Length: 404
Ligand SMILES: Cc1cc2nc3c(=O)[nH]c(=O)nc-3n(C[C@H](O)[C@H](O)[C@H](O)COP(=O)(O)OP(=O)(O)OC[C@H]3O[C@@H](n4cnc5c(N)ncnc54)[C@H](O)[C@@H]3O)c2cc1C
Image (cartoon, rainbow, N blue to C red; front, side, top):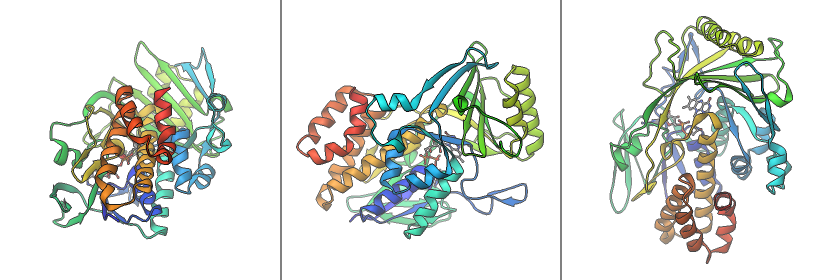
């Protein structure tokens, strides 16, 4: 079995390590996060304790089911059957019934019908704890600075001077991936789209905020002014509110060098953002959610150039490191989890050492075609998989959704 080095212990890196472990492949996860620096307001925060909610559709839930974590995730989050769109003041509502759509599309597992909304930090904790339970090591303070490979192995070099060598290296190091820069080319940069967002997380129970069932996943938009607010109920007690605009909502000390960053003066910044929302004319419960947020993160939206391949020699990219997705529709995590499902299915069905090359190549072909919605490339992938019908069946759900 190959020895695997995973760079990045975010949602996708952790899910990859777990998926590989299930089929007997050992990996170690290395993340740049510095636990000493991960302190906000004098309080040590959990690894990953920032951001708001992530939304996971059936394709991603299926992968969580494979990892044996679906029930735990469903219990910790909120399954929402509806999605609604509104003008910025809450008028002109349109409601979609996601559960009915999935039923109509042929989904048979009742647990996968409604998309799951869950705090990113909660999901991250579930994944990291699951890794810990099965003995997968996650080493922190390991910032990747270089990668070198030859015919027999690949080595990661970290900022602290240490190294890690394996048969394969998986870059799960997010939108600003150092793996992508070092192995695939320095020119493959994520570019800032000028869209900035702020996410508040609030205890709705404690603050007497009611969110209607049809508005548990809701979007409020002013198209002309390019203002966008999204609400995601993320458990029985919590919800996240995302505010994004192309006009900078200035916040003191805001540093755009990181994708997601916590605020240092919570009541002041939450109050400021709530005032901004009030001036936009949003429904009162949205303003209240922002004002009472107990966690705030800001993010910048980046765009990644399309890549022809996610594989170079012994290195592959996975999750945000491979593909830039619009963050507001939950596509980043969904496609990242699909990457994991595809990779694990390939390794499960092609377990021989001699197949390693084939696994990495097929992974890249299938995922590039999927992410770029490329019918011809997908057709080629399907035709190469047809002799292996058992494998085709496992990845078919992913291919099928694109070919239709
Ligand atoms: C702190 C944070 C908060 C987020 N909040 C939200 C949210 O509220 N809603 C939403 O839809 N999406 C959010 N996202 C994005 C979402 O998690 C991702 O789009 C999606 O889950 C894909 O995850 P990923 O594991 O590929 O990348 P990421 O989640 O970005 O994880 C990448 C990991 O790689 C590590 N890393 C980066 N560079 C290096 C390096 N040089 N060496 C070693 N390790 C490195 C990072 O520390 C991180 O742990 C957030 C991401 C982060 C990092």
